[in-house]
Structure formats: C-alpha cells, structure tokens
Length: 175
Image 1 (cartoon, rainbow, N blue to C red):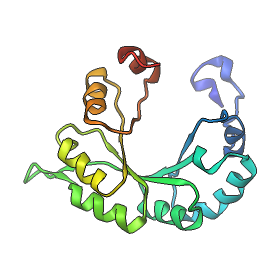
Image 2: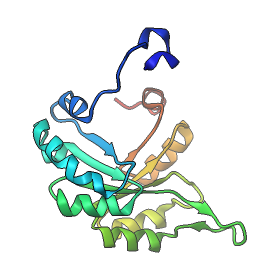
Image 3: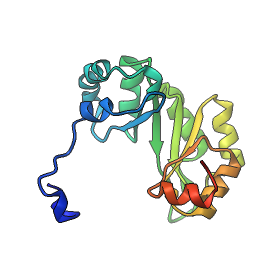
Image 4: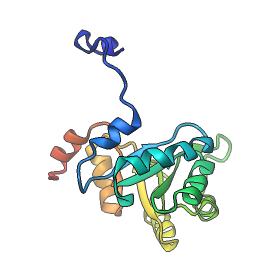
C-alpha cells in the first residue's frame, strides 16, 4: 500500500485507530480529526474506552460542527474543538466567517475550543480576545513558515498545527 511513497513500504497497511491509540505515550495527547459526519461518534466510544487512554489525552477535532456537537453530547469527558477556515468575499473583500459567527457556532455546539485557518488578515489580537472572552481555547492551522509561527505565537494562540514540526521547533528554538 505504501509503495507510492517508497518501494520499502510496499505492503504496509494503514493502522487502525485502536492500534494508534495503543501507542500514545503516557502524558501525551492525540488529536483525532473526524472527516465524516456525526454518525461515527457512537463507534468511536468503545474504541476510546478500550484504548486505556485517560480522557484528557484525547481531543476530537472536526470541520463539521455537528460532529463536535455529537462528541460533546455523547463523550462529554473528552475535549472537542471545532475547525473552521476563512473565505474572502469577492465583492466586499472581507473574510467570512467573522468572529461573531465563529462565537455563535462555538456556543451552539458547546465546543471547548476553536481551531481556525492561520489567516493573518483575520486572526489578530481582537479576534483572539473575542474567543478568549468566551473562555475557549484558540488554535491555528496550518503554519509552516517560521515568521508566521512567531506571529501567531506572539498573539498568544494555544497551539499551531504544522506539517513541519521539527523545522519550526528548530527555527523557534523550542524544546
């Protein structure tokens, strides 16, 4: 299966969620991004229970607000964060959703945090403060440039999602 990447990976199988959860180190977290709808949540429950992970080690994330709402309702002991991106309106040149729309959705689905696209024209101190006023965690995705990472770090985001963790850690002098 993995031969597209390198011939040495030929026959390598994709691990199951249960197999992945089994190797999460003690004291570390795993973020599980749900790409389908809320119908998966009941199937997630027994896998999480059998994993032996403590609730604080697991975070569910999804762009689907219904998935986050279902997770909060059916597995309230684990954290669930809503992902959202931004689109620029071609006529007005403004970005949507605006922070009040993000807050309204976050309240409705009872999320503990939002994880937004790292759009510098949108995510500023005022945006973050509005999210913080709601007592929500605030995360950004996907940041691969050290200048952008420093910018969001200085704004006080809780975390940055990146495709280049080792590179950013080295560039930002992080442990």
